[in-house]
Image 1: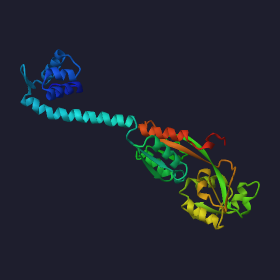
Image 2: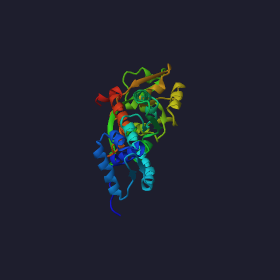
Image 3: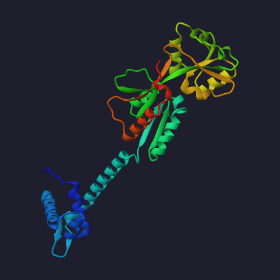
Image 4: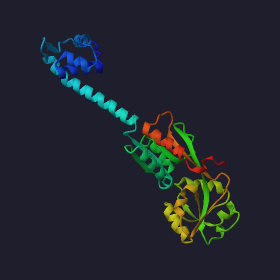
Length: 303
């Protein structure tokens, strides 16, 4: 079977003649002279090896072969137009979907404001969010189920690109009546001596604290999964905690006090993580860039 090359221009010319039943009108529709249009139709017939139109001085009618071709041409041109419309819709951000994985503390604190701004700019773009811990965040990116992630990442994984979003400083949170609430200088030894309400070891914050406090052992009064539970236990006087600044919105109670601490090496690096070497979809890139533009204000502070 010989190779046949027909362009969308050829197919549209064929359909124009089918619809207009006149070389003069079809040529005008295609912005061609009548002679150029006639030559184009003849070239299509020669390429296919079949006469597609019966014509005389008054009438232009499809041949049986032309009728057979018409259905397929309409389908092909329709599919092509739909493909172009879909591409342009995504390119102009009139349609699309962005999937983000993010730490729960970011998903319920800083991120909603960024999402709201993005939605206002691009109301037709669907937003999907997985609020999970760092390790699942990275796996969602690796598997392609998330376009990118907001994670506390110290990984040098060869398959991921990381862009620092901010350095999240740590704060002591305790009951207003606790001795540390008014102590002028607070060191690791002071913190380690107090009973802690801990997040579980599955949280990256817990592992960072243990590394930073070494060699001082931490006194665990309780280990829980949710920040809301940590808040309630501290409010009840059960102990203290040390958490990143971006989680402090959880501790806004009149009976609680938060104070910044300066412990060497104790900083949570929040990164935007995506697959290495893979371009983001257009809508995802817009959201990624907006997050960098709206990054938390302490990002430029030096450790």
